[in-house]
Length: 172
Image 1 (cartoon, helix red, strand yellow):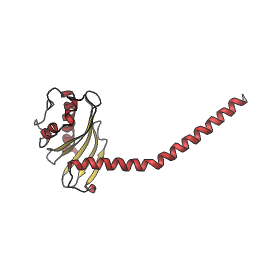
Image 2: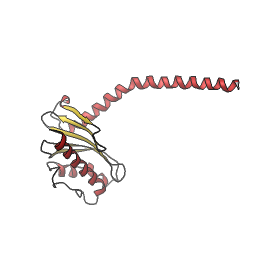
Image 3: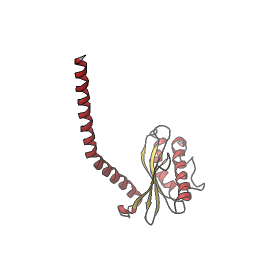
Image 4: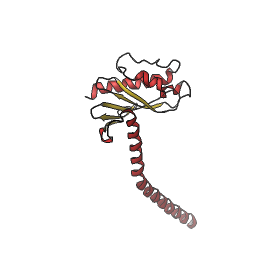
């Protein structure tokens, strides 16, 4: 009985020390990780607007919906939406920039976990070019933007339309 009590105290002490060490390591690395993530995010935003300073990208809203992860206001340009949609497998993360009238300024895929070939076409130049200048609230873009890849392209198009509707309803 005495041995069990000693082992219990010893294990509790070891667990407390390990927890403290992990907490300390997390407090030291968390700011560096957050800074690196912010830099990577701004670098991705600069793909759309390379002519504006970093300070022009201001986070307007976060976690607006399951699809809209962040909304960035870009001084003098409009808004960029960071989106995550589900697709055939892992879905697509992307940025879509909209002007004040709801037209797509640009679209940049960040990641895509869908089938290589058809599903990954939402990351390619022809898809991006087809979206540029399209009215996101109108019928200029549709779910069949990529023939045969509607499982991947449909959620992306629906996400862009959701962003445009959110912008029209909540952002001016």
